[in-house]
Amino acid sequence: MNRFVIACCMLMVGLLTSCEAPVESYQVSQKFEHKAWYYADSLKLRIPVQDTTRSYQLKLRLQTDDSYPYRNLYVKFKLQPPQGKATESQLDFVLADAAGKWNVEKGMGGLYTFNEVLMKNLRLPQTGEYTLGIKQYMRVDTLPGVRSIQLDVVPNTEETP
Image (tube, rainbow, N blue to C red; front, top):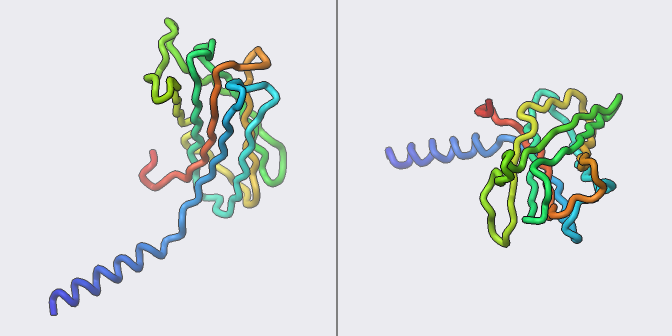
């Protein structure tokens, strides 16, 4: 009898916890065929927002090779809400120290992969579809050695500081 009660309780707990709504995350990525990121190339991510109380983390993943000539990467973000004016911000993504030593170890295929949380508490206060754009914002048209970039918008969990 005890086993039956325990099994029923475990089944109920499993059913109750599985009824939670799935947490949506959004991702867009681009591989650069010519191993270069051109100024005209931008990445856009559409984010449908229903829950305006949720906050998000904005993450950037960048893959370069040895031919990338700079120690940093300036990027420009543009966030267009469903209604109203877009906001823009610029970020300096530091890839190497002042001596030129990369901030990550070389990985498979001789590539360096940088993962950075750009924003920890992104708030989207309107319901509807947001558009988040990113482009390179260096003083040159072509950035050699950039293999790919990825942008992720991930909902914060209750444990996220």
